[in-house]
Length: 611
Image 1 (cartoon, rainbow, N blue to C red):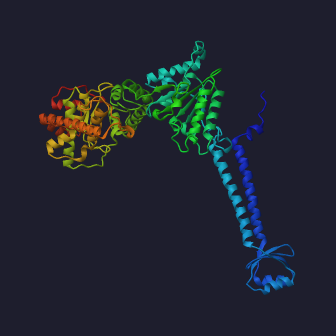
Image 2: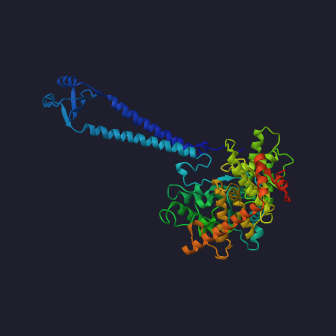
Image 3: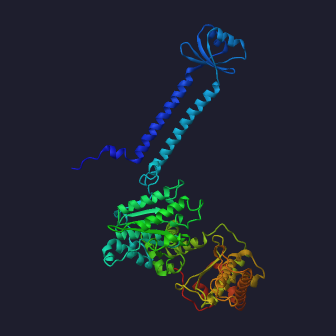
């Protein structure tokens, strides 16, 4: 039989128990001081002036302490009293006559000093007690890291292999990232396989990608696959107002990780602690930089003999990290976690659709094609929004229409049923959106296929025209970008052509068109006059002269005006189609691609409706 554990070790050694015992002692001491002060105050009896004179004349007063007209005294029997006397010199003669010991002192000053001392002591005790209670509460869930005796302890949460359910099958998509991470898993499982040839596995992996693409999930999947302890902490958990605490927490974290080696340490949002040194307040001696210095030392100094510690970190700002953190021996392997492509989006949708009652007619491949630029988190949210919409309608299954509504809600906002447009505004909006849609249809080789056009207000938009890509595109031609600008300006062109006036509804179109034209000139070298030169304008870095800036503005204007004129020409040549499409849109409010092609008599492209 096992020997019972020592109760003293089990109770008194716990941080929370020590804090409570110390708190009880402090509060007990404070109450004793308060009781003594109250009891002392109760012993002083206030008497009238006439009574005071009678006590003096009857030889009951032993001594007095006088401060101006305030008098405190002690009687022969030891009791105390206080009174206020008039400014009468004869009183002192009476006191002398009856052999009363007279002390002239600042009674108010003495009482004030003790008063301040006692109340100050009590206040400090109460503050200390509150602090210990707060710290002991904060220690729950982080291994006692919250109390004052363990402030330098790591706040990392430790997950043992039995509690980690994630593996690579839990991560849909991200095929390239998983392939790189499998090297780490193989090393943790079979270290001798690499050591026999003198190979050294990387000690640090930096997961780089935009938020929502699964960096944290990939890190947990590695721990699950490797079947080893996993320490998770955020970069901000190292930083504390007290200098040196962050460095102490780093040391403690790596001590724990080595104790359970082979293990994985995961630091989320490492840019909170790993930024370039020399940029913080206090030069190179502020708390964040001391923490970073300790992290650099720990990463390059721990041993791999007899066990290994792999450090993984995640960030979406690798450009701000200190160079010493990225050198070989530390985070020398960077794993890109990009936005999912078409195949990955379909896999992610199917993964999150498990447990959701979805109609068998819903085609996840078409939904994936209609969500370019969505992160994994966005796709999970899309599934959830569609389920919520179906639930509100008391449906038995989530249908294609629910996914349509969910996607529009995520991209544009909720349908604004409270917005009531006048007939003139509806007509202008219908021609505006028809201008976008018609140019999209008339330029089939340079644009993505039309999906739908609607004049139902959503978010801040009074109408919307959707197009969906046929396949994943990683490059775009100059003609395709010019066609996109023409589509952006098609709404304004229709307003000018039909109504001979313009409205404010094209602001977002102008913004998108201008940004694309500027990218063509400054980033992609698509300007005949300025040539294949990159003119950086990011982060306030303008690496060109004022004269060149004027040329850039002229080139941007030239591209936008050229696309605008192209839009007007196309709409003028197809004015009958524009009127037909706008009138039908006023009637039905929403038209899908197949309906538009049939209405205009145009050879249809692939129908992208989720059906």
